[in-house]
Image (cartoon, rainbow, N blue to C red; front, side, top):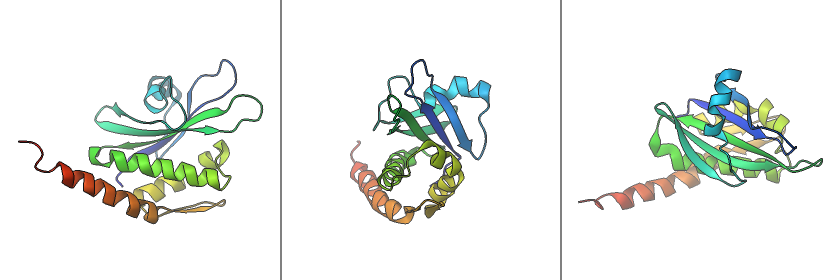
Length: 164
């Protein structure tokens, strides 16, 4: 998959918290940029399970929103976002992000520290369509891409000839 960056954003469950960009890879988003861009990665009113698209200049942002259990109050809301210039990869990106989050959650490794620490590995795995290897777990993305891509091809084929 052709992605230029991955971004992790968060809205803490505590009172008076504001959404923020936690980290990004391969380039860092500075504080001034982050206040202008956060709504592209974690829009107001987002809920766990939401997948959405937005744009930053000529690039597209694909985001998946999920919850992180917070035992001291309300759950934290996070989003993992991919930045790509290829519009035909939007659906694939959504499904891959959702699968990655679900695998981390099933294995009990879905938390802010694990995601931040392994953001580079996640980026490399998605971009190379291979596997994500962390100290905590391994996620085989080849299987995920193999399941997702045929669905995408079917959609593209069904649209051919539909317009006169």
